Length: 246
Image 1 (cartoon, helix red, strand yellow):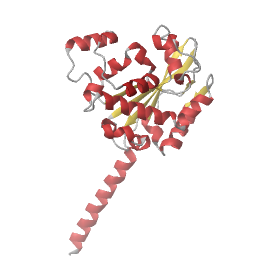
Image 2 (cartoon, rainbow, N blue to C red):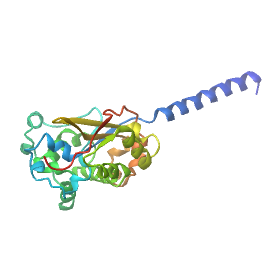
Image 3 (cartoon, one colour):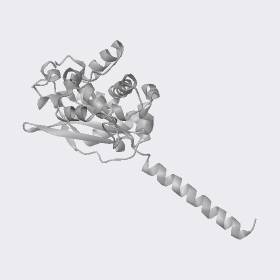
Image 4 (cartoon, rainbow, N blue to C red):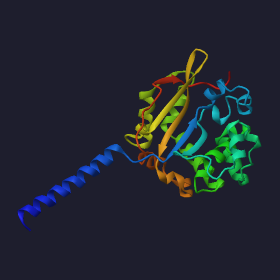
């Protein structure tokens, strides 16, 4: 091989390696969002909703994250009729078709997603679930599995240990990186809302890779799905971890 060919080969190899390094630094691409609510904060401004009127300090959602939804990126209302779409957008969720689930799945979803008391699962399926290739059983099964993994992490422990207190973004980021690997917090956005004069943490939206969109994600490792997603800004810099009750 001539010296010119060797130089050309070396240059090509260096470009491949540089491209791989850049891709690794930038992370993957976010294909799904896991939306996890802190229910007491949601209920501060939605006190008349059934799941809020019935909330107690002993119920699971008082000290754990609740499943809001699993959202495919840039897709919604796939194959949904105009009538159902209009009803959903008008907030008439109980007029939407009932979601067909096994008794076991219904029970698990009622615990993970208190909003089922207001028909939230019908809204989530019509708007988001229809844009996956999963059945309703698998779609909600994946969401339940992922929010359970979040609730088994240092992130949930941090929130539960600081109810009624202000928690800063840096502490939450550190908990994400501890539980889900270095850089996991770069795939998370935190939302806050005002409840009177207090800014409370209302929701975490967590970027996930395309593997979150298959039935096999019911046994997936949440850290792997997060690490395969793209980066985002964290959003709210601090907020109070609200306690159950108004």
